[in-house]
Length: 75
Image (tube, rainbow, N blue to C red; front, side):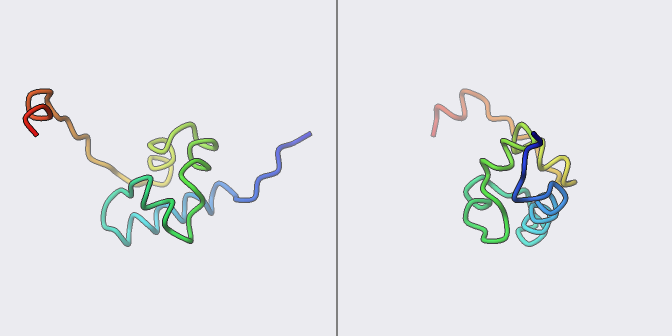
């Protein structure tokens, strides 16, 4: 029996891209969960394997942030 999805992949990715466009950056999990037009962040995780995978498939770029241990400990 085939899985039945409430949201189509294409509409999920379009919602994610629209949110990123409104924010002018990659959205966080909390921002996705708070947006009424997006499915929950868990839905993206379950469907695409990770939120980063969903962002990539939606064409949303996100910066790689590296925090050194020293800087993190100083805060």
